[in-house]
Amino acid sequence: MTGSPGLLTTIFAFLLVLGPLVLIHELGHYLVGRMFGVKADAFSIGFGKEIAGWTDRRGTRWKLSALPLGGYVQFAGDMNPSSAPGPLDDRLSAEERAQTFHVKPVWQRALIVLAGPMTNLLLCVAIFAAFYGTYGRVVADPEISGFSANSPARAAGLRIGDRIVAIDGDPVGGIEDVADHTVYFPGKTLSVAVAREGSTTVVPVTLAARELSDKFGNKAKVGELGVEMVPPLVGRFHGDSPAEKAGVMLGDRIIAVDGTPVASFTDIPRLVQPHPGRSIEVTVRRDGRSLAIPVVIGTGTVTDDRAVRTVGQIGVGAGRLERVGPLRAVGLGFEQSFHVMGTMVTGIAQIFTGDRSVRELGGPVKIAQYSGQQFSLGWEAFVSFAALISINLAFINLLPIPGLDGGHLAFYAAEMVRRRPLGVRSQEWAIRTGVALVLALMVFVTVNDLAQLPIFGG
Image 1 (cartoon, rainbow, N blue to C red):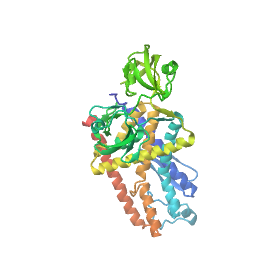
Image 2: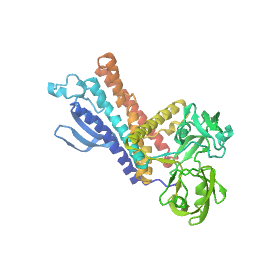
Image 3: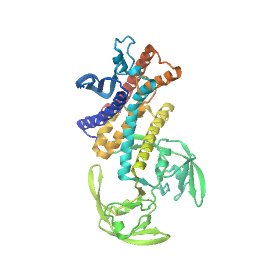
Image 4: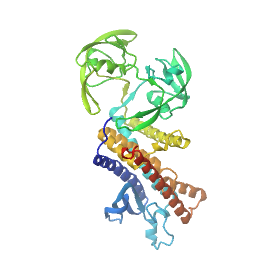
C-alpha cells in the first residue's frame, strides 16, 4: 500500500480541482446571462466572508470568499446568492429593471440556469475527447481466457474460449461492456450469452461480491464474474519492441513461451519479466499455423509501492489500438460522460434500496483526500479525476432540489405549465427548504468522511 500524500499536497490538489471547476460552472451562468442582457451584481468563488475582490466597470463584484466549497453568481433582482427573487417593490428604474434576471422570458432564465451544469458536462466531454484523440481507444474482444479462484462464471458452466456476446439481453462488443454490466452489481444474477462452437448458449451467473482496495487503502465493493478476458492476441507493440523486431506480427496469438503454454495475456509478464536479456522462443499461431520465433527479451522498469524494479519485456500489448479522429473522439467523450453519469444514478439507487452502504457517499473531505492521491499519481490521473468531479458537479446541480440549478429549472417548468410564475413567497420557502436539505446532506457526508479517517478509527 502506498502512503497517502501530505496535508499541504492534499489541500493544494483539492483547491486545484475545485477552484477551476467552480469557476467554469459559474462562468457558464454569467456569460449566458450577459448574452441576454442580465446584470450580475456579484461573482464569487466560495461562500461567506470576502477575502479579496474588485468591482468591474459593469458594477459586478468579483470576489474570492472564505469557504471554498462552491460559488455563485448573484444577478440583479436576486434577493440572495441562491437566486430567490427580490421584492416586487424594488424601487428600480425601468432601465435597471430591464437588466434583472427575473423579468426575462422563462426560456432565457432556463438557459442561464442550465448553462452552469452544461459547462461542467462539456468540460468533462472535452477532457475525455482529448484523451481519446491523443491516445486512441483500446479495443479487446470479450473472450474468456481464464478464471479466477472460486469463479462464479466457471461454476455456472462457462468455458475458456467462450466469447460473451450479450448480458441480460444487451449486446456486448468489448470487455468494457462486460465491466459495465458486472462491476456495479455485486450479488446480482445475470443471463450471460456466449458464442461457443458455432452456437449461442445462455447461462445464468450470480456475480460474486468482492471488496477491492487500491494502493492508498481506499475500498470499494464490486461485482465479479471471475473471468480473465485478455486473450494472448498481439494487438499493439510498445516502443522499440523486441517481439516486433524478431518477426512477431499484429494479430498473432501467443500460445507458448519457451514451451510453457499461454492461455491469457496475463501469463506473458509472469514468464518474461524475471528474465531480462535472455533469449526465449515465442510460439505463435498465425493463419492456422504454429510458428516458433526466437526473441531476445528487452529490459524495462516497473514501480511497486514506490520501489523501481528492472524487468524483462518483449514490447507487446493486448487489444487493438484504434486511432480515432476529432469527431469520433468527441462522440466517445459524450458516451463516456453519460456513462459516468449513469453509474452515479445506479449508485444512488443502490443506496436507497440498501444494496450499498451510505458510507460510500463522499463529501468534501473525501474529494480532498482523493484529489491529493490522484495528484501524486501524475497529471493524467489528476486530469481524469477532475473530469469525474466536473460531471459530479453537473449531475448534482441538475437534481430538482430548490436552491440548486435543477430546482430553478423545476420552477420554470411549473411556470410554463401554469403560464405564470410561482409566487415569490412560495419560491422563497421552497428555496429555504432546499438549502436546508443541501446543508444537512453536506453535514452528513462530511461526518461520514471524517468517521472513515484513520485518526477516528475508520
